[in-house]
Length: 342
Image 1 (cartoon, rainbow, N blue to C red):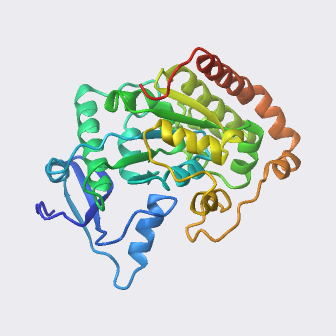
Image 2: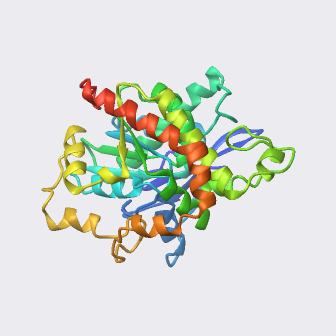
């Protein structure tokens, strides 16, 4: 394991936990910028280059020491979501702002956010301190890779991070949080046809425990539609319980160019004009396309046609109530004048 202080041009791509302690995996970025919709897509491009980018492992202390040389980097916003609901589009759109660095579902962030083994188990104070120090170091190191001042980090978490949103509030007490939601039937159609990571994680051993605290046997007894609907219900309930005055809820239907540009300005981001070609190109492109060449297609009508009776019934039983309750709470807070930025 190398603990060289010369980490300029390298970015952390993994946090490794072992009996011997915590270590950090790095890859050499050089002049490469973080512009892909997902951070893992950026890593894949570096590994496919000729020659492939060099990789190394250091101690966690080396990351923290390296980051201390850099200015602070508090997130302009932390984005949470229930999966397949427009969070990538939001990140891409905010990424058109001046001096914005979008870190989308980066594995080091996910590993540190999801440290608790279940939503009901609080981490120890030692783990909380380590989480805070390493998350701060990861964000600083990535934010100042190509900027030297006034960086606006936009952090997009993976869907399961919503279960531990309050843990991140302890790390960033003043950062604005956003929760993206969408009609549960539409989310379920997407996840049943092409399961997201949290859906694939249902395949635990019979004596294991699922992401939501259910036993492996309970999970095995659930149909895909039931697991998906109940999981979405858990995400939505967690959001309702944990949201505070610095957190706003946005529905997929509200992700219009004008609304997102206004949100960006509220976050202190200098956004391009909503009618500019650069900005509108984001809304006309499929958000997850690494090449940014596939055209966006509104799939809400198609998803309505694809929704089976079993999807609709499961959504009605486990997900639609928490969805409408969260949206209603958010609407009431907005009517009282609650502000995202505090």
